[in-house]
Length: 218
Image 1 (cartoon, rainbow, N blue to C red):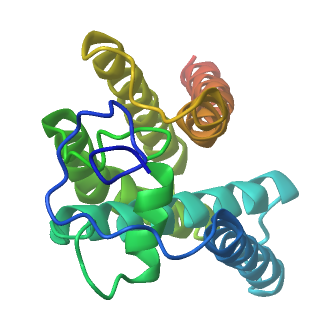
Image 2 (cartoon, helix red, strand yellow):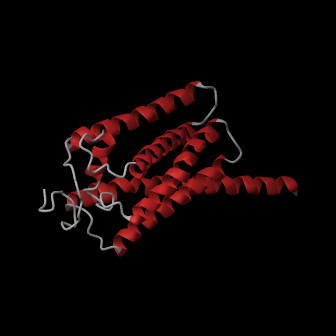
Image 3 (tube, rainbow, N blue to C red):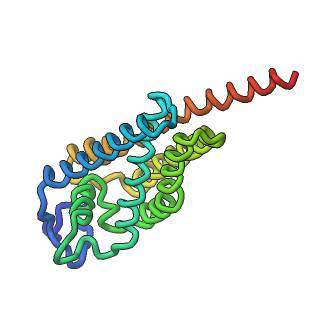
């Protein structure tokens, strides 16, 4: 714990009324990872039995969109609507999760304007749109590929915004190199790698559909 009563960087960051983290890293990460796997497993099993005739690739996509949609809505919602999450005497699990993650990016602890704006877009667009993508894939809606492509662009832009604003603001928001690689880079990398792959796949599918339509009209 630093001289300002918190474990975050920069050390001079002022967090009035800060209540120290009570759960260990394992006690925070294990439930999150377990719940994420349960969501993915539930979607995989349901999509295989609901008669939607989805391919394995589409079922995997449904698992991803369900996970990312719920993650966006629950975490962004808690951050936006709980301004005192770092100072509550009886912290919830989500309060503790943000205290842990802020070791990799203290802008969450400081409620930085760039992070706040990013999370507004997350809960307003990316979260609900991700859940809509699950429905669109399961129902074989014609807009499914375009919707997924649009969400991926939003996620990639959000990651770019996230990393660029961190660089411009000083690039010194992690408590140690471990938290930099594990949280700032590692925890965010899935929203770079997976959306890139899905956007590429969606682009190819959309392009193939347009080519097929052009052949029909000749």
